[in-house]
Length: 184
Image (cartoon, rainbow, N blue to C red; front, top):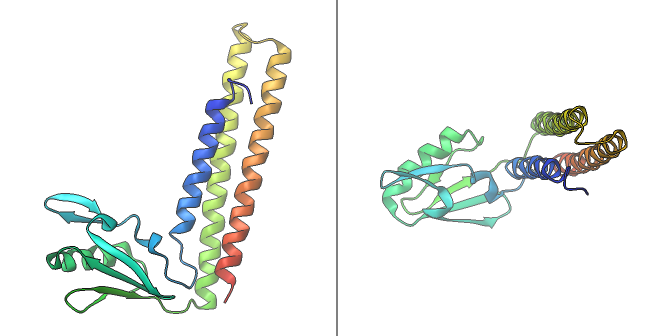
């Protein structure tokens, strides 16, 4: 990889990482504590990530248990979980909040698969946009005589290879996630 393409590959890597993080928040029939990653709770006037104000565990395959460090946070945590629209209702016994996830229906699995494909397609569009921006930059450099015609062709070819590599990786991640979702 040349120095010229390095910043663009870093952007492609970030796009792939963002998609991977998005996929972690999509549940596949079993409880995954990553579903709660984007939830923040007001704690002494500061929005704090749920994991920093409570202990989050998975005691059983379809249950997430949240034990706040302070019992006064239970109502606030429940409110934020409800706002996050996870498809489950939090239950609490005064000390611990439990999220019990039902089995996914066939229809819900298909909806999740569509959502996964849509997120995947958006990531691939972002990758292609990064390639387009790179090639535009290289053409401007060629116009101002910073690059030769051969250099331009080499860089365009390198960007295409990077684009193909990241799109293949996104396709593989997408197929793995859909297989995980559709497995009953």
